[in-house]
Image 1 (cartoon, rainbow, N blue to C red):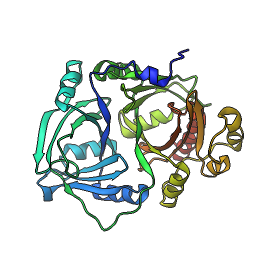
Image 2: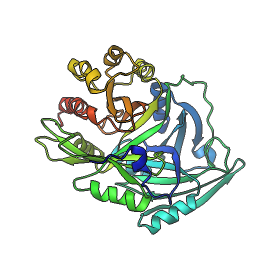
Image 3: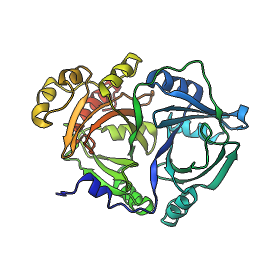
Image 4: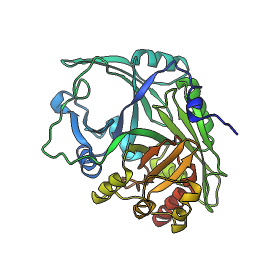
Length: 376
C-alpha cells in the first residue's frame, strides 16, 4: 500500500502541459436559453456573455453563466442538420467540452497531438477590441473534448464572438466557488486505456484507485481511477462498470447517454450547509440519506469535525476523511430527464480524496433511484 501523500503523488506528474484550472465547461443542449435560465434560477449562476445570430454566429446560440470561478457555456444548434443538434439528439443534454486554462494553447496542442491525441480543433487565434484568445482542442473519451484556452491577452466578458449579456434577472449565488473535479464514465474494459491516455498524452498521474471490491453493493459494482495534473488543478476520475448481479449506475449512464461521457461535475463550497439549504429552497433535488447508523458512526469513523452532525444529517450530507483531513459531500439527482449528468457539492477540510468511505452509501442511494426508474 502506498504511503505517499496526495501532494507527493501529484508531484510525480509530468510538467510539459501546465494547466491553471478549468476555463469553462460547455454543454450541448436542446434549448440553451432555457438551460441558462435553469442554472441561474436553481444554482445561482450569473449572466456573463452571449453568442448567436445577433453577434454574427449563424449556426448556434450560446449563453455563458458564471459563479465564483465556475463558468458554464450552454449551447444549442440552430438547424436540424447541425452537429450540435445531432450530439444532443443522441446523448441528450450533456457535456461536450471540458476546457482547460493554459499558458500556451498552441504548444498544448503540439505536445498532446505529438503524444497521440486526436485533434478536434487546430490552434487558432480569435481577436476583437478586447484583445485575443488562443485556443485548440483534442478528443478525450467518447465524443468529449478538451479545449486548451489561452486568455492572458484578453479582458472582454468571455471571448471574441461573444457580447456581454446583461439581464434584469440575477438571482443571488449559492456559494459555489470552483470546479473540484469532473468524472467520466467509460465502457467495459476501457478504464485502463483511458488512464493510459491521460498519462501518456496529458502527463497526468493516477493518484487514487478503487476496484469493484471497494465500490460495490449487493447488486452492482464499479471501478474508478482518479487522474490529476501536476498541480492538482485538473482532476478527472474515470469510472468503468464491473460485474454484478444487476445493472450498475455506470451501465445505466452508458445506456441512456448512448456512449461514454461526463457523469458528474463536482463543485466546491466553503459552507456546504448554507449552500445545500439554498439549493434545496430553489428546487434542486438530492439523493436520499443513508441510514441513521451512518451518522452515529461518524465520530468513530471520521473523528472530530467542526460542523454539527445533526445539521448534516438533516440535510443528508455525507462525511468522509483521509490521512490529511475530512470532507463533506452531497450528490444531486440527475438534472435532466435522462438519468445521466448530476452534480456533487463538496467542502474540503484538508482531505484530498474523493469520499471512498461514502461510496457504499452513495451507490445504494443511486440504486434506489435506478430501481424507481426500472433500470436496476
